[in-house]
Length: 185
Image (tube, rainbow, N blue to C red; front, side):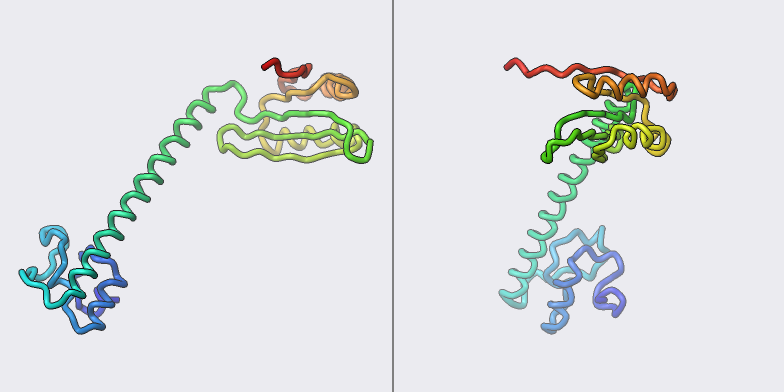
């Protein structure tokens, strides 16, 4: 708003709220500004501040700018880490993996948990079924929807039956049988 009304040049680096606060107090924002005039093209800086208020306002503005810079650098660091992880994920043979785990649910019924792990976008999806036939019917649609490259199927208990039916369905995808055992720590 201060730029549009001509209080400061269009290249001003000072925080807008601080500029407006100074203008409302009857001050010229350029008088006490510590930014480089070569960058902002502002009016020449006055050597002496008109008030203590100006010194405090400039100090606050500098602190705000440093905090913004820190936040931006942290954001860039997290994005670089994320890109690096995605590049590592992209080296894998399968970019999206379907994981099928069987268990006995809380009500004593069989439970089939189908997880879709998108390694590139680092997102996981999960759906639980009680009926193996229903789970097996949805697997081809899940493969098409998420572009899965591999199915990892537990073969303990009735998971073996699900694995056999998926193998016989000839889905054209790598199906890996997994036998889970306890961790030895």
